[in-house]
Image 1 (cartoon, helix red, strand yellow):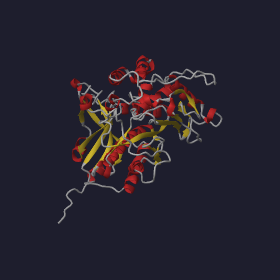
Image 2: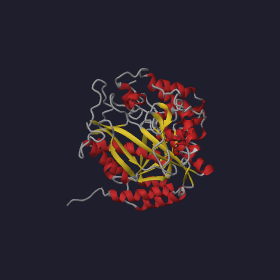
Image 3: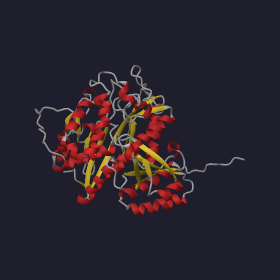
Image 4: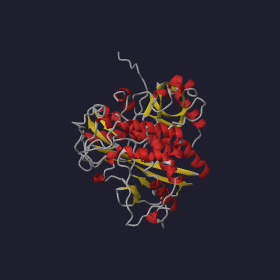
Length: 477
């Protein structure tokens, strides 16, 4: 007689989508943490088929970390969770290692069991120091606190949508096993308009899109990109903090589904020379009482004065914040003008070489699109940087005449580090300690990489990339 020993929760995709969209609606409606805590703890107490609660958080560079807590333990101890911060690169030192892990009850997902395993739900965590204050190295808290300030002081609702591109490679852990002589082997030769309906790339995209829709992403368009074996899955704009959460989940889902297929999903900005790299175009708009403050029917390109001031401030500090938007050695290969690279410090409605583009829009969809962002940027730090720079940064109104000399973003991470280090704007943006630790991590990678990128993707820039890092690889330095 067969006995089902493990009757853990497995929810059909159609039900998952409905449940996660309901949770998303609660979140964007700004229901209080107290009310959400009561609702979800009651649910977890009653649902016997859930075995564990996964708490997710980001480190300084944007790597996604997850801790699984037994459900019964979590319900009894969710207000006193701790973890070893010294185990996270760039977090606390060994002598001050204990950190607390708070719970953001608004950031709750039911999970597709074929991707995450059965019987689990995901909640985002808030990192706290030993005094129960937001930990200064927690970029998610930095963004969350800033967005809360904008809403309380100015009633601003910030909407963000990111277009995250990546590549599908043959083999499991293709990045960790990278050899610069042979390079990567693409899983598919198909790309934009050239991928057959059941091509391996299309199968991968379909599986990822299904999982994302089930998690409430509200997908709009999923397709191969221009380069062979390149993909992009687009989903609806939403609250800025939720948008950042979704970027980490997006990449995690893609990586796991690729691994299930014996492949690797890579978010290196430029894993191969001779073809387009991958970006993370970031679309931003600001609403106040359901009015899009970036729209003006009579404004230049139908953008408001506020939107153009937002753009001008970002352009003024573009070189200084490049290390945040383009956070790795490999990211600077992507800023190659031969492949539609957005490396010109200017804004344009038509020129795809411009760092900032003004897409065709109406009153509802008016937005600023920052095209220079790499897919490996820390999404919380990136969105925070763009928002605060765009709203509060210094303004040096650019000369938009045809004869104006075009300025370019840094061509190497070494140059980006110099601009970041010397910037007084990033001093105030991040604070002394965060800037010092972030700069230290980026300098370590840069110091072990050639100042001139050359025509081949080097082994070091791949296996020591911050999203691929593990202790074994790092100790090879």
